[in-house]
Amino acid sequence: MSAAEDQARSAQLASPSYRLAALDQDFLLGDSMRGVRFMMEYAKAEEALRAWGVRSTIVVFGSARIGEDGEGEHARWYAEARAFGRLASERGGALHGPDGQPRDNVIATGGGPGIMGAANRGAADVGAPSIGFNITLPHEQEPNPWSTPELTFRFHYFAMRKMHLAMRANALVVFPGGFGTFDELFELLTLRQTGKAPPIPIVLFDPSYWSSIINFDVLVEHGMIAAGDLDLFRFAEDAEGVWTALLAGGLKPDENIE
Image 1: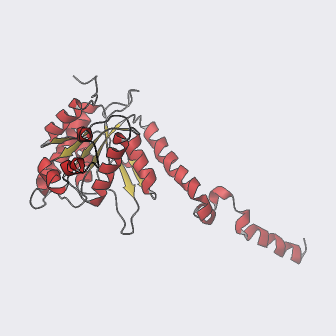
Image 2: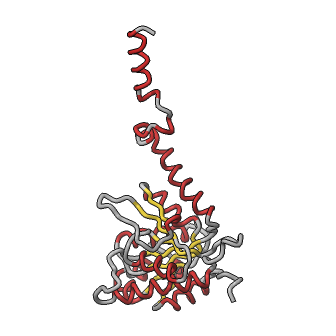
Image 3: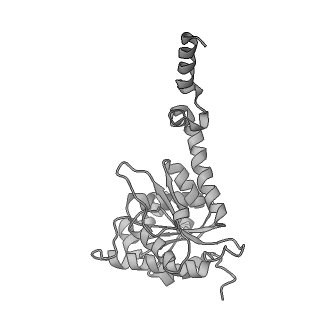
């Protein structure tokens, strides 16, 4: 091979166009591959959830700013979220799976700290798996230490994260929170209101908080929602009350637990 041919071959091999598409990060992260990346975020989490036999979840949302030793009501909210994660995991079916049975009502959160960490922690207290659907943020969010490592995911796209949060949900439990919590709450309420999601129970924890933040009755008065839309959710004061409200709303617990 002449020097000119050798130089030409080297240029070919070094060219980005010669890279295998699946190994070309510049290509995969380009604008034209956004749809592919979206599909990959769906498939990766789906594969892991199936491997663990996760058939259904109970989604728990609430503020990342609530700490175990927080001021005011924060400590109580944290303790009740942890207690709910524990009792839902014990009674719901999350502890099944290794013997071939699917896991139902597995605790799933946004994967962050605060209320989300408390719910994951409650599941870990009884040796149950739980899910953390983390999102990449400008100020990097790290997963809380309590979600199961193999079920701790990181998403770039909010839309795909929301899809995974919703698609297996048997119930939604919403503790006090801010914009992100409202976003998840109204996402599921809209899906329920429009009939785009199954009739899952939705429970808002601490009615005094929610009634001070959102006047749902005013929405009815102004004709923005129907009076019957208020039946899409219930309120609860403690972890046992949340569980009772979920059962009243149609949640099916693990029938194999005595």
